[in-house]
Length: 327
Image 1 (tube, one colour):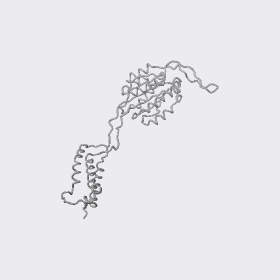
Image 2 (cartoon, rainbow, N blue to C red):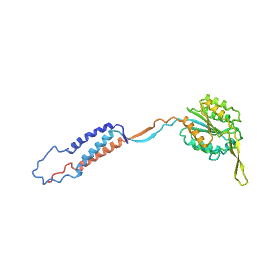
Image 3 (tube, one colour):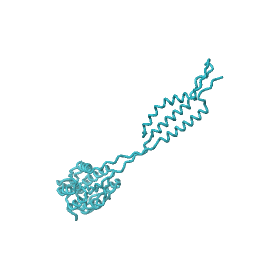
Image 4 (cartoon, helix red, strand yellow):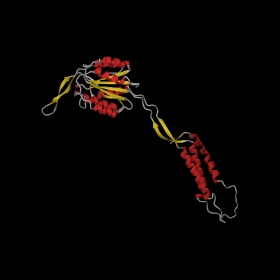
């Protein structure tokens, strides 16, 4: 509870005078006695209830003037978030076993999930691609649904290949009508563009013309990496070392054209750092100062003051303020 007009509390300095006036009330006539033995004993507390209730009512009235209020609720205006499209490569090369917990695909999904968990007001969408591209999740703030639909993605669900341009183009089609102040594409791929009918650089130029930044993240390197080849006669997974072609220069150029930044990750930890850096670069604006809604408490204090005054008047009728002298 707080007071909106605390300067009224200065009236408390008048309370001592109120005490004097109320407890001396009715003493204007004096009687002289030569013998005090016949007087009653000192008056009991009941004879002081009326002035005490009056004083209490005065105290409550002063507090009511100071306008006490209690916090009813606090409202934080919504933050205007970003629109972010994630474009995920699901080509067969994402099964390479050089990332934890299992392979490149699972590492990318885990890092994206952690990224989603830190969102508060951003709208997220998800496109996956191999030889062609498809929309998995439209722009949404339903983060649980996003994670559920993302978890269903697997490699091998569409014809193999790496159509980076098609993936970017589909993401652009979902962002071009967005009214968000910040629109971003995060591209995750581990290969070279070798399919599709849209040039990645053309897509990057279109993104730049619309004020959409692209942050390409290259997963892995072009060195030999372990790749699953099947199972042996005992049911154990087998693998061999393969070379997966990459094109970091293409991804760097995409980032430069669109105003984004290129990242290369050779481990899950570096992939996490890349997302953390993108998050810092594209930080949402801070929410506006919260609005506090207060509820006036003065009516309660006034009601209690009136009740005390009424009770004091009733008591004044029941008990005399000063005891009679025994005859």
